[in-house]
Image 1 (cartoon, rainbow, N blue to C red):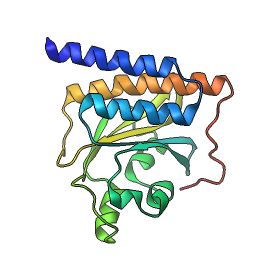
Image 2: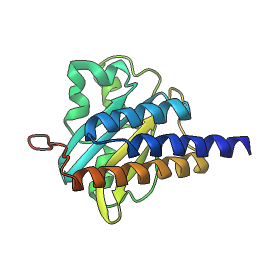
Image 3: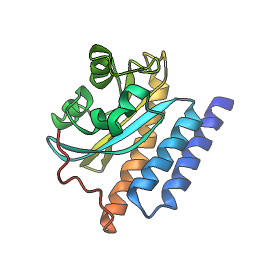
Length: 181
């Protein structure tokens, strides 16, 4: 019972944060930070996408040094398995990503410390039928997210997707021009 109450408080906190928002990028960063704080996860990032091959790193928190280097260049360019699945319409719910290509590349190319993060959960961000991007979350040493964790992350993603759609409806946009995979 106590665990369910914590989940409801977390959902309420995220909803309140989104409800007070009027700027897309600062809102996504704030929500992501709160999501990590409330779930005990350590790292997260949000990619927004307006179409195949186009995306923007819209928010991040707790990235390990290997992904932070060069002004997050390796997060802002190139493709990865979660975005590929998203663009191929093969990502329709929260899933475990067995290996993160960006982290794997960081290890292979010795780009720095990954902070013990090797895997992450990926959740599509949607609003109705509109596909908006992906939310990724991780923690050092965590290789698997249980179904209840994925369900909670999916709930967050629905809230975040709805907020993105509403902010865009109000004319608040993320600029994806010039940002491609």
